[in-house]
Image (cartoon, rainbow, N blue to C red; front, side, top):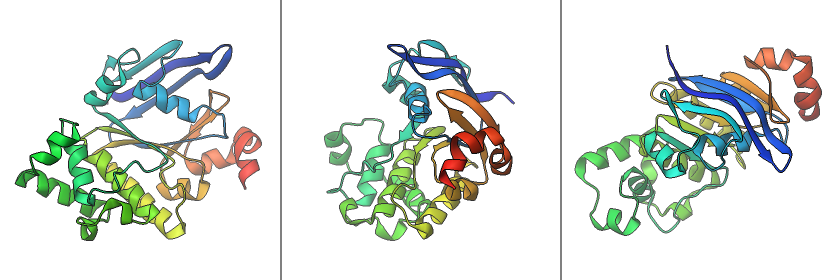
Length: 246
């Protein structure tokens, strides 16, 4: 099976400080992968490099067999990669349904998208996404009225609506309680049937619930990779990361 994404020996140098230092990562289609590491490990820089916000000093980012590390961010998004940031970015005055509809439109100009209404076929797809993220009963509510966890789920729904094959989720359970975290883990595990998902997080309880392969970063470098049990048992991981969060 050919890889969907290959980050190959990527370094990002900020005036002598290497936020990424020869880092490599490979994702297969339909895989859910978690990247963990202490603050400053380079996790967010990795996402920024994949999505085109940061240009690598050296190395390649290959998506669907094509090098994308020099493409503008909008071109990378158009090729099928979408990122959800830690803080929800919903439009609070719009309904939950309209937020997803806006994300689904290829013409991202909000005045054009909302002015033409939602076609019936698209409405069915939006309803299916809202059901998938647990917001089917909230479609007509203003997004600003949702609880914090519900806003996070809405933004995951908005990412799904773009049709992106690769989804980058940056700390998707930030600010959530245990019940919301469990529900989010269930949602993300289910995405592997149709999408490839890269999750950036540090909550080990949440990572365990995802039951996915884990890549550990430290000081911009690859440290180790394996199941959550293998990662927990690695003495280097315990020294630089897990030992400080247990």
